[in-house]
Image (cartoon, rainbow, N blue to C red; front, side):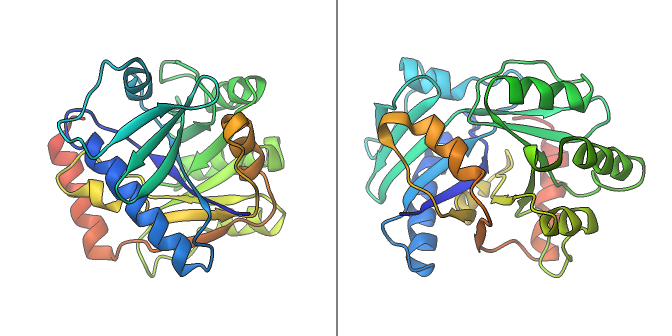
Length: 261
């Protein structure tokens, strides 16, 4: 079997959390069918920012939706939630996004660590690994350039295949694969894909439009563990698409102007 996973998902409760869940189910199902794996399990790896606890609120029932089109069921163990929509089922897997002192983004997938931003990047990677999660160095416009390029290079050299690299819809079409990403992938490091919706109007529609097709089984009885193993399975395949340069520029500008989530 296969898993189709959007590995970089934000839920912004004040804006469009419910819409994101609906679009995840619809878009991941469409990508799975287009890839010839319509029965693939749909997974969304959450990357909640500092101060966000939407998965916890959903699990505890303290966050509700105005629409009856969404049904929530507890997953197997903490950090997992199953979402039923009219377009199918999506398994939410908890995770965090951290901003290191070097101003690089580190994702902690399939792990619940409530840590403040601002520590050295290596500190987050060490904590994620110690907790059994999957650390990811996430590409973002400008954040792998100049001095930060050296930071990313050193982290890849230090952790090797224990750290994954993340690609997102914010890398415009026509923007070649970053050299560090290409070199690491050739050496066996997994590069995974995610939509990275921003807290701006209509960005909820992008959820599930760029994802990784993973040759692994999803185990509902051990959902977090099976996703951890799947993310480390060899040669994930990217499916879906990224935005063009104009679209990405507009998203970045709108996000900068909003200054809130």
